[in-house]
Length: 421
Image 1 (cartoon, rainbow, N blue to C red):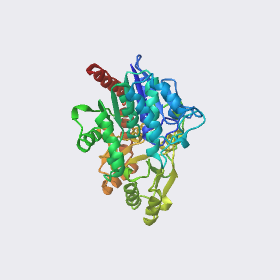
Image 2 (image 1 turned 30 degrees about the vertical axis):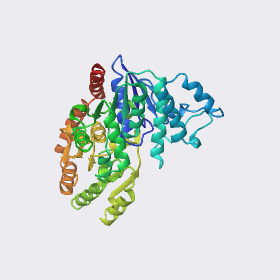
Image 3 (image 1 turned 90 degrees about the horizontal axis):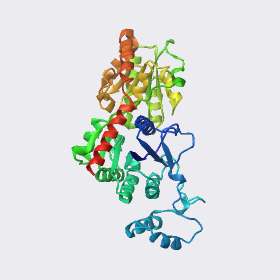
Image 4 (image 1 turned 60 degrees about the vertical axis):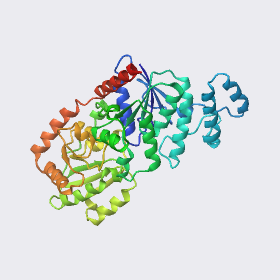
């Protein structure tokens, strides 16, 4: 079974959970002896782990011949392509393509991030996908998140192969309901063209069915999982046990993640306990607002902002934390609580998160219930028996949530779709 996957980021260069989830799923699927995965991304850096997949960079895929008469080349191409394919390629290059983004090798330049001209990069990615679609061998197409849906659609139109899209989040999650019409349309088109839709939680599945008007039979939930800790992480020394308790928020400091509820809960806890410090690890458009909010609640001396953290840094802060908090307003899944629990950190998560569907040994509160959140934090830093129970049982639970199992579910979806073709 050969799968052509489209993604946007991949470890070690990640900016959020999308790259982590893509890595974990592919590695889990690679444990199947007959599974062969090619992963396409905007800009590989060369230090990715390629031991279990093939990586193609769209930034390294030529789409034009510089300093060559295109009319002459296109005339030659037209002899080997169907008329519809020839005109599609020609129109893409003439109408949608900006030559200022082409390097001397005839490749489109990509930032590999989420730039201000993101929509242009998404469109250019789709153009290159048309080239890749004609040169690679594959049985099925798998597009991760809305950024790659146009590429998946283009590949399906070129190849006639079935398309699976993987919904890691929707714009309803990212915007608290203030949906960007352009993003919504890209998401909706991807879902409409897809032969099957995978969502990371039942919460997201309901959003796809109700907000994007998809047939429930076409949508399957495959919950995310977590990678086993390697020796480099296991060897990080445990910094807990110092005088002050550490309560940590780690993630993008944006309205989706509910950072203000963490700050407000911290203020309430500090009214009853003075042996606790709060850490907000991450970056985002609400960071300055959160700094001002902490100052207005007179807790700045007990509140710390670390900035963006990744890789080993994430686990270092988990190993120094007594409690992890994820108060997301709308979280399609949320891998970070699982990672914290792997490090023996009891976690408090919002009921409005996908991981709440599979975690029994995490404390669950409504994101907006600051009193309940504060009580949960206070209980975990005050009562050792409660802390130990959730630490031990949480670790057992999360060690059985494996990407190998998620990969088996995805493979079952592939087999079913190909059988129905």
